[in-house]
Length: 256
Image 1 (tube, rainbow, N blue to C red):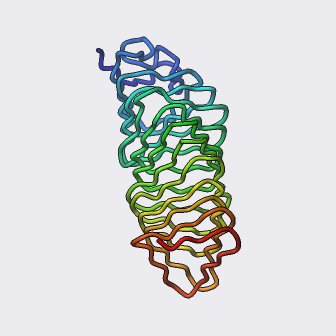
Image 2 (image 1 turned 180 degrees about the vertical axis):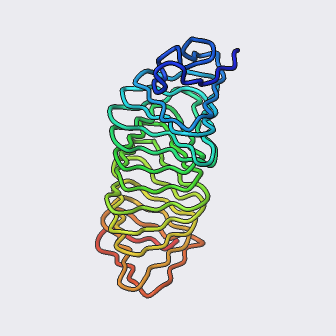
């Protein structure tokens, strides 16, 4: 195992330029990597390392790239996915006070993945069958999620915001495990939705798949929670307040 540090002595930008690294070789599967310079490092090749500490600057994936390893993104640093398709190896994780941002392209979750940084989605995330995407830091969503059968998107802790452009579909589950979910614009969830925590609805929130609720909803004036089609279950712990409307448009509502 080797410790590899970015120097930028090559072209100063490319992950795949060996001259940019202190060992004059591109980091590989057995390496621990440090980038501590305020620079935008770009990659269009796979990154497979033991760990990477991004202490400053930005690391941007611009091609069809697979990421494997434990990535620490420090405050004021960011990992960005921009264009093409991003995939992730088994055991990959992101943590730290920085930002992981999907700007464009497709973000494929082919293995269980935990993102314990702030996460923003402006494009398309696909959570494959049987897999789990855990968002355990703050998140801001203005893109789409396609959650396959037996797959799940889990929102855990802190604050999650669904803004304009948010869209959720597929036979899997969107699960608010803990923390707070803010609905800032009109949002539709066509997947199954589960909530064990607090949802604040500031616009129109449509649940068009099955839902299981044992958390709280605060529905602002002129806002609405619309239950559409299939089966909706309000279990112990369900609570609804605010000056807005809870509207059973169609389907069945079970009060457990």
